[in-house]
Image: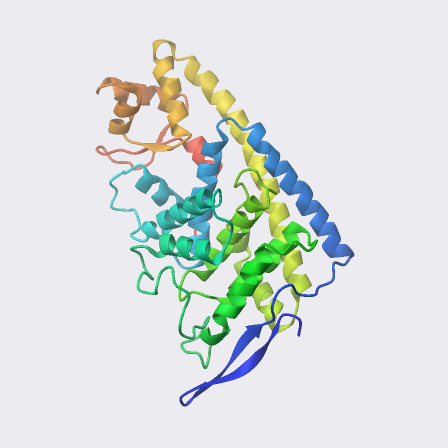
Amino acid sequence: MRTGNYVNQQKGEIRYRAFIPNELPLDFVIDSELQTLLSKADQALGRLDSIGEIVPDVDFFILMYVRKEATLSSQIEGTQATFVDVLKAEAKVKDLEIHKDVDEILNYINAMNYGLERLKDLPLSLRLIKEIHTKLLHGVRGEWKTPGDFRTSQNWVGGSSVRNATFVPPPESELMRLMGNLEKYFHDIKPTPILIKTGVIHAHFETIHPFLDGNGRIGRLLITFYLCQQNVLKQPLLYLSEFFKEYRQVYYDKLNAYRENDDIEGWLKFYLEAVMVTAEKAVTTSRKIIKLREEDTHKVASLGRSSGRGIRLLNYLYKKPLITIRGVEKVVGLKNPNALNLVSKLEKIGILKEITGKSRNRIYSYDGYVKLFSVPEN
């Protein structure tokens, strides 16, 4: 087997088989189908990377995508909080309907932003991975599972025990050797297409499963981190969790076939399709944002004496698209009822939409913008 082999293990009276992956690099065949997908994915990624030059305030665009990625990647692992919950929490909106595990998504956002900032001074490494893991699990479900430390016990995926698990990663005795090899592979200069290498890194990391919790989320973060470190992306714009969630069972099946059936090529084809589809969707969204911004700026500019403050509020909404009347007061420097009057005008021209249905403590959404980043329900 190119990817590795199952090895019998025994701890006390417990017997089981754990998968021990081979060290990287692995041998695989780039056939015509894989080469075609690689070419299409490279082209789509190039178009995605160029949108930073055409989207106004690309940092706001990235911020929304980070929120979306954090929501979806966390939902893959069972988090119930939604994209709107995240927007409400960040806007510090008091709403009893916000799901309690929204902090897991906020941690993911924090971990991603922290990692991207650290990459400016620290190369992708085991040290950085541990630091990101600490941020991910701080104060949330799983915080007792040694945040920032590789596991020192056997873990498993699926099933109630190691005996009936869907997959058993390598034992803890193999962990540091395998993670050291993965770190070396990050910086291996042998000529392997970057997208292919990124796909291998993700699958290999998930196979090693080095933490007691958070492996899926960290593994998906590694995709963006590696592409940014290799300067394939000038901006962190590629987030694959929407595709992985939509095809969740296929995602799991392809990762399992990678190690169970030695199907490296099958996994890579699925991964490259994810890159291609996701990049093309992001480019389409960026064009819609440009059109929306032009149309809505024109609408707000028609408000006469209110247009100046209206434009100021509109620009703020690209950063935080949910807002309360009190928030409007702070952003544009108006007192009630003038702030409420401005909001009413933006409602009438289709910029803002009240989303609570309450008579007090109302929350307003920049609905057209939020819909461009709509997240499928669980």
